[in-house]
Image (cartoon, rainbow, N blue to C red):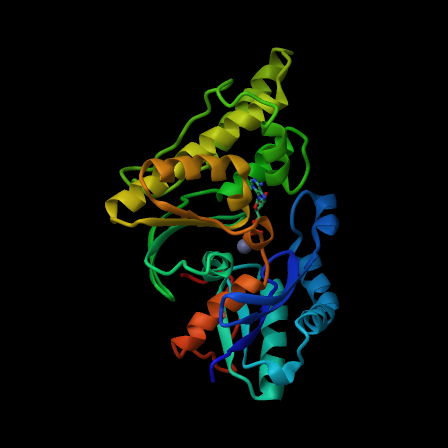
Length: 336
Ligand code: KG4
Ligand code: ZN
């Protein structure tokens, strides 16, 4: 069969999402029901609320995805679903749903790693992108520098030893009263600030050139604010946002450039929620241009959690003959 159409489901955190994707690269529909307004009241994702909301929304989201793609389950060749990492109760909703549909319709079931999904988001709008390439995955839960050696073949060069990049954005945003999720708000406020106003630390971890640490820069921001408050001095939130953002993006760019150079790669992709950060995109584009490296990034809607990226990843797993059994379970700390 020439065309493979996959129904993909994603529910690992606070978006209930379903998509229909053809041959891994063509998105027929991409429905995302965000719970942000619900969790915002608590300053972060509340796992129990997330699971309950997924249960309420998932059938409707899948129906919408099929409807917008103008197809029915008869047109679907396989079901792809995120089975980890993520919140266990949230993941279970998607996994149970995917298993039920696959079993009832006698369709192959493909469990997908969430990070593999983020990486694969790059295939959707960049039809010419093929491995090998380096991918920097920066989201609320993950910061991984991954060498994509082939479809479904990953070598992790480095990852964060503490906070994820997005987590640092969210915590700093909270400290300067921007609310949740903070990443996009810091991005916006930073445009009015001076990135060289405050010299926040650029942490390097031991002797690894690829690992990350963001808890230091986060603490430095909190200490800076507390110091100002103690002295009853004014502080400029836009300067803090811009300087913090610069400290984080400098490290992300440095590590990614070390990766492409040391591994002789000619292509770099970024993925995950923080990949939509405008300063990161600009700095990474400049660094890639200087080294004659092709730079890829997904549209913002494909950077944050969605099911289209899961459909893209599931397609290549399908091609590689990977199938999950009926015992597929949610794995909150699943390794890539
Ligand atoms: O990939 P994602 O939707 O969820 C996870 O898998 O974690 O990423 C969400 C994270 C949040 O921490 C959010 O603050 C961050 O991505 N984010 C951003 C931007 N947009 C989203 N961080 C910096 N700049 C942005 N423009
Ligand atoms: Zn994610």
